[in-house]
Length: 109
Image (cartoon, rainbow, N blue to C red; front, side, top):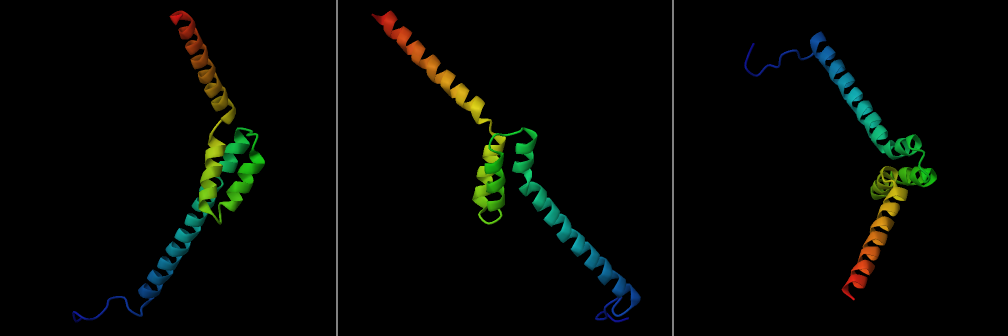
């Protein structure tokens, strides 16, 4: 065997290694596609589980997200944010600060 010869070339081991490499490559591509699909469906799954009011909007944004990926990010934000409680908290903060400022004005007189 010389230094320039290639081991396993045109033998049954060579064919077996090519088949194994092909199986690994196909499995990797399939698993990557399944993983991409699972991550892409994440906003819709979250919306279904939490019975989100904007389920239709999230579904449409998720499907449009296949073309424009920034739209998918908006779907994720909407799906994982509880806007009703956020608006209530903002309203309470706004109301509390306005009441406190009114009380401070009355006290300063």
